[in-house]
Length: 293
Image (tube, rainbow, N blue to C red; front, side):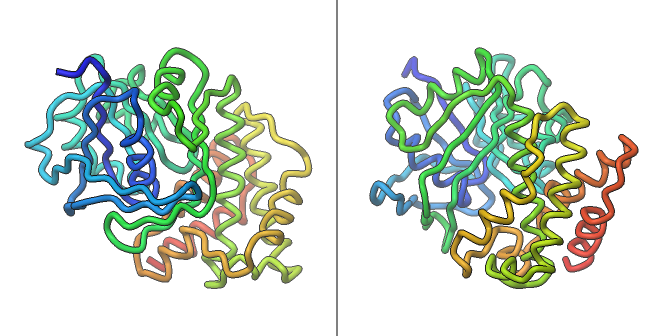
C-alpha cells in the first residue's frame, strides 16, 4: 500500500475536474478517487499548458467509499448537504477536509458533518468551464489559497510542480473577502442576463460598485483588510476583460440550474444584518436571483 496520501474529490465539475487533472500528475499523492452522482469515465482538461487526459478511479455510491487522508469538496455551495453521505464514509479521525468553494463560510457550511479542526478552507481562482461530463477548458492559470499553518502547508504540498499556484496566506480572511467582492459583483450580469460587457454601461458599473462597497463594509467589520478603491478596481477589471465573458452565476441562470446567490450576495446581506450594516443592494440581488430559480 502506498504511504503517499490518498485523496477523494467530491464534485468533479469544472473546478473539481481541473484540480483532479493536475493532481493526477502529482508525485506527492497516492490513490485519487472521484466521487459523484453521475459517472465520469475520464477527464479531458484543456489547460494553458496543454491537454491533460486521465482516468482516475470513480465511484457513484457512497457505500463504496472508504476513509482517505484528504477529502476535497468542489461542489457548488448549495450542494453542501448532499455531501453528507460521502463524508460519513470518507472522513476518519485523521482525515483533512479541504473545502474548495465560493463565499466566506467554508468552515460553517460543513460543521454539521465534519469536526471544525479537520476542515481546511480554500479560496479558489481557476477560470474553467465544463462543456460535458469530464470535458473541461481551463482558460487561464489559476491559484488556490489556504490559511497559514500546518494543514494549509500540507494541502499545498499535494501540488508540487503543478501549474496551479497553491499557497497559504497569513491573512486568509482578507483573501476570502476580496474574492467574495469579485463574486458579488457578478450579480450584475446574472440579473441583466448579459455577459461582462454590460458593465460598460455607467448605470451597470454604478450598481457593481455599490454591491462591492457593501461587501467591503461587511468584510472589514468581519476583520478583513480591504482597500478603499476595491469597487473601482473590480469595475476596471470587468471592463478590461472579454466583453462576451459569462460568469458562473449567469451561466447557471441561462442553463436553468440553481445559482450560488446565497454564497455570493445573500451572505453579505445576512452578515450585514447581524452587524447592523445596511446592505440593500446585495439583499435585493439575492432576493431577485432566488426568485428566478
